[in-house]
Image 1 (cartoon, rainbow, N blue to C red):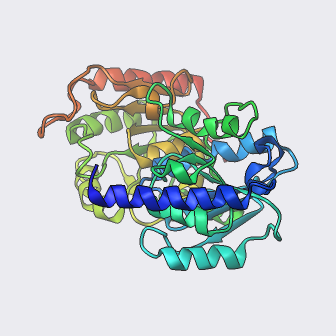
Image 2 (cartoon, rainbow, N blue to C red; image 1 turned 180 degrees about the horizontal axis):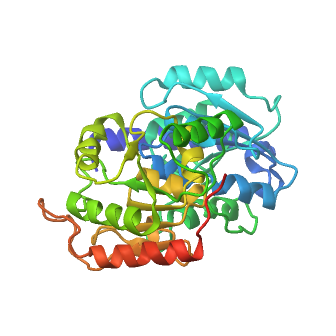
Length: 374
């Protein structure tokens, strides 16, 4: 352990000792966790999927503590993930504590609606950072529960269990609060305006009301090494357009739009790209109107799961499927056909997943789920 880590550990141990003394007379810190009904969930993850996999916590807390009040503090894309969620009493936008700890603490202390009542600050997976723990401490909550790199500051610190999924790990927070957790799927909500945007996007593309729509997620971050060859995506697209008359909609970021347009240029039928042209709620609404999806294991895939889009998922051989993927659900066909060491080779491409496997799974999904939402 480094000198800096030792110094930090000493400081946090001192803070924890002071809190114990201050609450030795029966303060909020010593209150039984099962009696807490006010929760502040902090959301500052670095990956979209991490935020989406924290959304089942809202339903699980409501199920375990029906009278609870839930406030979510977030910044960046996490705001859109939790925006419009009917299970949340309030969504507070703060500066990201990883960049502006003082600003995030000031915002929370000014905006928190618990009116002096005891509350527990919760940190789900992907929020295990020292500055987020400091934000939790300085926000005024003496009860802190969840995943952390500073266990001395938490009443119930949790550490990631790799034999469980991201969702199951997050639901351990409910168990740490002395309730029985129930499993819930990720959810993301959007407004009627977002749905109208999605309908208009499809209408401008010439999509007919009874025409299947297939969402393609063909790109990931260059650091993720989760690619499938463009000619294979092309073959899958041609299969869907020739057999089902499907319209292909490509989604992604602005940075991915050039690669998407290059692939679209090889297709024989018209297609649409919304890469970099939607907000997260708009994209969620658009995916909810689609019939089927073909996707790599990446952020928009989790968005598709959250809106119930049937999908074929092409996953890399080195990633444990239990952690991120929707196992055991007939709406999702997952192809992960090999195991290789971590880290993967620099030139790794998911060639072990064939076009025939993918098109057969797409056909199966279209047989089981032939209609799209209107």
